[in-house]
Image 1: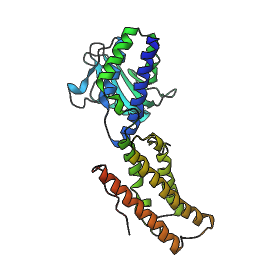
Image 2: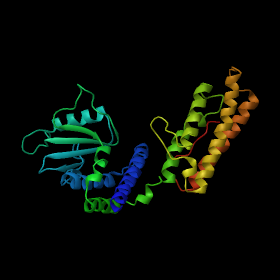
Image 3: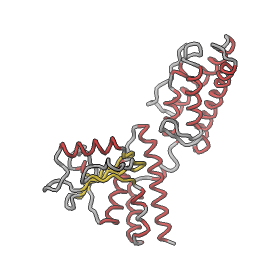
Length: 299
């Protein structure tokens, strides 16, 4: 039972890291340390690799994050190991004379997609010495490890990061994602100035989808009910209600094939718009989210 519990704990921490890493990319935040600790611990116990952080030796070491120089193995960990990503990695390695069989070169470089990866197609395999894989392939090896090795991985992971900050995701981080989709012309501009009603409706619907946890153009935040803070749930509910009211105006326009909102509907629409902008700006100020710009409405 202890064996299964340790594997479950590792999987839980990894799931939290993967979920957070997907959001962190959107916020341009870096969680490299716990991911690197995870890779170092797992590969040491699984393959007996002694990986070191190459950036500690050379800042922004070209194309690699971790390496075992004695065994000639280098690791690059990325959220998405796309074809474009690993092609660029190989080109950088070649340019810097880092991959090959000679002394001082790495005979094997692994590009690991922590969140996802693009499996090389037949006939389009990466160059010799470059291996592209997803992180799940390492998780599948956990059941083969001894209790002692699993315990080492768990201990190192716990020490690397406060995982309570990752699971569930921070309210603030997810609000920032929703906010960035709110601070756009569809909200800033009055009904008479914004582009086509259909595009405006689409912009509002994207924000509503984000509020309830759906993925929009590869970006995702947790659903409204998963926010810890009542104040976050309240402002998100208000935003959702306001967007719904404005969408109702637009849908009415589209259903009647009208060219524009009536003057009365424009006034109602803009009153809702200005009120929700005021509420959002006030909320950010109250939470001291000073790094988020004010939404400046066009009057």
